Image (cartoon, rainbow, N blue to C red; front, side, top):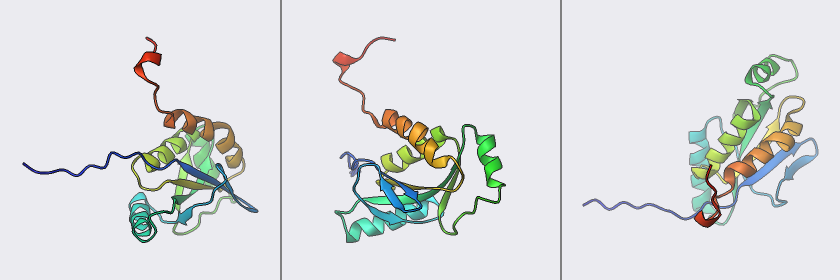
Length: 152
């Protein structure tokens, strides 16, 4: 029989920051260590290395974002002259629900403890506040005990 080592401990609480002109606004007020990479595999490797060296630190991934109500609009914003990506940073182009799903997956899979969102198009910061944060709250809320469940 093969032994399997599975860690079923809960992840740390989700950490989220929004990069603004005057610095990072942390949703929960506490800063975290930031990692920057172009893909999730590299973010995971950098996070794992950092966790080995400093196990007490929360780690967040930098994600540049171009979001809009629909993906076609978000993609069209990429063609505007205002949007310039930073080399070596993960770029997300799409909808608020897709971004919320990406952040939730990064957290649930233990790739990082959350993200710092770096708006690269007009209106993105407002969409984070008005759409992404409420979606994340819903996605990350654990279901209540069976006694509070109601039939559909």
